[in-house]
Length: 249
Image (cartoon, rainbow, N blue to C red; front, side):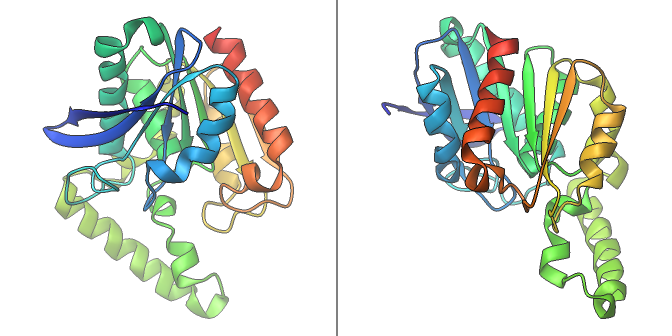
């Protein structure tokens, strides 16, 4: 795939990305998860590019090649997505008459929040997105889910929430996708594995129940955290392309 290296700003933070031209007037922004980067999204980019879409992949603040010293785990990352959308509108307008976002985990949460803040996103796919704040930190995986560790998990979650509010100025309620999903300005597809031990599948149902139409949900059997593409590739690619074709063409 041919690509151009791009740089744009969000809150005066330099973000690094790639623009990959396709054969369409629609562009899909691919938003990685917590601790990830744009290179980790190339599997998604490959099949979407084959489907004809232009793509923008970028590193969130404090990730990959981008600037910034800390992550808010969704809230300020939504501003990063909006900055990417604005960059497309200003620099690749003929390629971005319509814009979709495919967000993975934290990226899905940020995409939901972004869609509530702007009318320039036409379609969102949220893959393994947390409804709340703590889940996007992957604490369940780091601490473990054994009963002997439940008390430790609660203590760590409370401490992390407190420290993040001190650092970012964002209280936990402002950093929950669940509090934005009913204000989204775009269609949404929720994808979630029924065996997700990091972000429980109940989060997907909570988001779906509160979301406005048009909305759809795909619960993927025997699949963990953002594992649907790896373990159900043909079905995943088909569902994602059909959704974007419906709302971006």
